Image: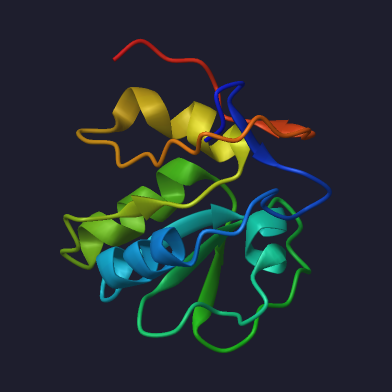
Length: 128
């Protein structure tokens, strides 16, 4: 997240930090990753390999590639994780999903980037 809470621009991240991407990949491997449809579509390789991809969309006709599962809402995805005995779940965006998930979170991993960038998607404000 930038100093101005920017997390996206035109469907992509407005910076490139390979070490942070490596950290994300290493941390989330083997754990469910919940994300909105636009975030899912922003990944060049999808679904994200070696982890369950839970994609939130209200579009019942939306077709996902093998390895990803569609849910209507965050609570349904979290219920699925509980039923599968998956206590560690990562929320991977976008802004609306973060906003809904923050009050439910036990822990947050957030990378602060020093760059001030233009963007159209922001991380929600929260009280730690």
